[in-house]
Amino acid sequence: MMQTFLLNRFHRTRELTGVLVLVVTICGCSSDRIPTYACLGTVRFNNAELVKTGVIELESIEHGTTATGKIAPDGTFVLGTYQEDDGAVAGEHRVIVIQMVMNDGVIKHTQDHGGAVPFRYSSYEQSDLRVKVEAKELNELVIVIASE
Image (cartoon, rainbow, N blue to C red; front, side, top):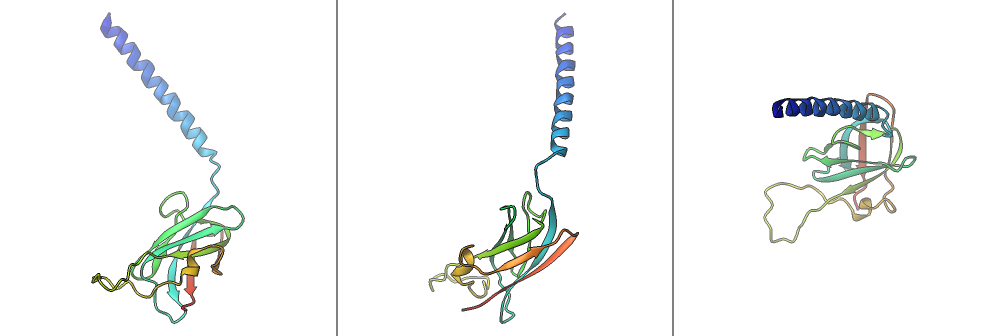
C-alpha cells in the first residue's frame, strides 16, 4: 500500500515537473530581450598604443541597455549584454572605458598595464566616444582614446 502511494506520488511529481518545464520553455521563447549581435574589437590610444587593461561599456541610446567586456592585455574585448559574450543591441551607443590601476610607485607590477586612460572616458556625461552596432552576424569595433 505504502509502495503504491509513493509510486503514484513519484509519477504525479514527474508529470508536474514535465508540465513546469514545458511552461518555462514556452515563456522563454517569448522573451522580452532585445536581440543582440556579436561584437568584438580593440581599444587603443590615438598614438596607436593599445589599452592593455580595463573594462569597456556601451550604452544603447535607443534602449538604455548596456554591454560590457573586459579589455585583454592585447587591447581586445568581446561584449556581452545578457551573457558574457552575446554581443550588444543594434544602434548607436555611448562608450566608456574604466581602468583601476594603482601606480603609487611602491608596488612593483609584474605586468605592463600600458598607458592610463584619461578619467573623462569613465563617465557617459564626459566621454565623447560613440559606436554603431549593426544588426549583422559580427561587428568589429575599434575604439580610439585621445591621450591627454
